[in-house]
Length: 275
Ligand SMILES: [Zn+2]
Image (cartoon, rainbow, N blue to C red; front, side):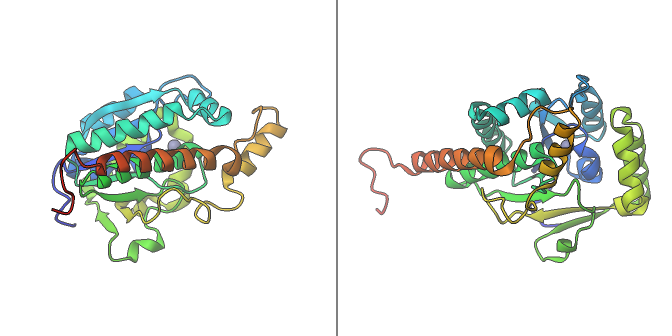
């Protein structure tokens, strides 16, 4: 593992409670500060914050200043209506958390075109990392897949970080996953899909993109075709689309991060930047 990965040097950011199951071994080894955007209530209205909090704390990690901030319905409503304010504020809060924790690295959801909240989480973290780098903080940025395999092909690249859990770690991970009643259907289908042994591996991939998700998320992304089906069934009222809803947010976050970077670079009166 790279030298920057020492106990407590990692900030973990994820869209939903439950994602911590994918990096359960990492949670125990590095005890990161964990930020979670929504409460995972989905359309059931039942929060998953308590369940994830006990997993995070049980692994010796700690919750950060954002932990289940929004209802999922509020996140979708803000995206659909083009209300970027809550997202710009969250990006600033994530940047503040990176600064306060002094984290050497941030790991967060990958943009996979699977769930729009995951992709939004990635955009917020990229914005926050851009802000901190502009302010002079050296922070490495990693992503982990939620829809894709635990050991993706890109894990072979030199800057990827791979953990192999020992038997005790894998046992604890599976126990927490199978005990996560609110996600039991997802947990079972994910284990069936990849097989138990696959979850011994946890992979962090270096993030080499900023605000342009096109080309990474499928065209159209899964969530659009899924949304179309749900609208046809009468379950959703409107399809959440990449170009109409997510891309404008990416542009707003980019503009905001660039403005913050310019402000950070502005030198005080009388100072000579080249002196
Ligand atoms: Zn999720």
